[in-house]
Length: 590
Image 1 (cartoon, helix red, strand yellow):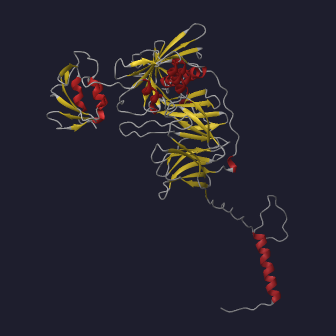
Image 2: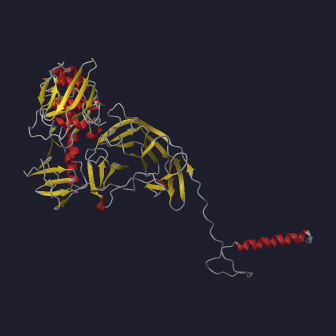
Image 3: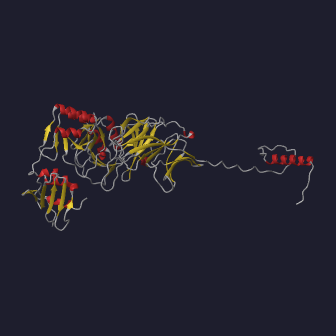
């Protein structure tokens, strides 16, 4: 290649000419034509440069709150007990956080929203009318929102006054949503799950990462991509995540044990673009059910738990739920005893029979998305103030397994009972400790027509039968008091009830197990052997040979019981007991 040498002046001229051409090539055309001194070729404007790519910002989760489950006190959270069939214990299901960083947790086992401020318990808002499996808690100004989904009877949403816990509005989602913004619960998925939005319409996603921590949370601008993210805190397990209106994101998690502690994390800080005032709630209007306004008085009754006049808040809640029902003419279900009796000041009266989501009133059958009527009644019947008032009229303590073993409490003992009951609080029956059988001795305290049954160290229940039972947590002394007031008496060896004191039971029946340990069922077996004689026509299992039960005691005592159709033998006596052969079906049961 030949090299051409230019003089300095010529090189300067070429540089100036090139600069002029460059200036003309980037000049934007004017919308109005104007004379141009030197004609040039037309130049198309350059295309708009693409926006700079977003670099997603990673945030580090911060632990805000740790709440242990035990001991069961009012400032902690409850858990629904484990059940046979592999149902694990389940604690709270949802959270929300307001603009002042107060934390709200839907405590479904105790039917309440618990509020924590500055890491400490502030108050609890009882919501016994909300379906236990509700979730999607949202706080907006002075309103709380919850949603309960039933695949059989539809979906119901609740708008609640955060100050009083009153149900302001309930709606079936057939008519749309009453939530002020989108809110669901994040679910694990193969790609990502969008579970909510903030006031600036940014989406929040729960996304699988495939390595390290299983998932991460993302704030997403649908037009530009991920703005910020945080890895899921480990080793806890996700329960719920809550995007606040200003874009702050929080998580509710549990440890791997399921019943150790509950944790609340701050995942993402607020987004400057998401600042927005709270929405204005819809003015409250009274509900209408069965063509009538809320009653002026309503009585709820459960067998074994007595009756109670519901307060105005509970009456209105029942009426909101009932306002969502629809008449059904295709269901043939026989109503039973009324759960609720509504009365108005004009003298009118309406009995309402409840069976799950079915209501029977005025000779008609109705079906709706709510099933919490009995739950609400049970919660009210277990109120501490009510129990303490009932105890002031006198009480009887008894051992349920030993007929006639009971006594009335003295005035001083009643005072102790009232103090313990006054420290209790209502929970759902599903928080009661799950036991395949009650241990011996089983203590009961009778307050007039109300019977309290004690469940372990901290729990009690009221009411028996097919309907819901009322449940409460006490201060832990009630069980000790009952044992002190009425110790289990000595039971002579001739009394079959003394078999309660055995610690091991084995089973033998020709043609089946040679010897099987069924000590797990000792109390159930002994209760069956000491039951009332029953109907002589009671059927017996067909073709079952007699079976032998051997009871062994810590003292070395051994008792043999032989079970035959219609009777059993004990210490040389034959005791008539129709239907007793059904005890052979305890064989092979773990």
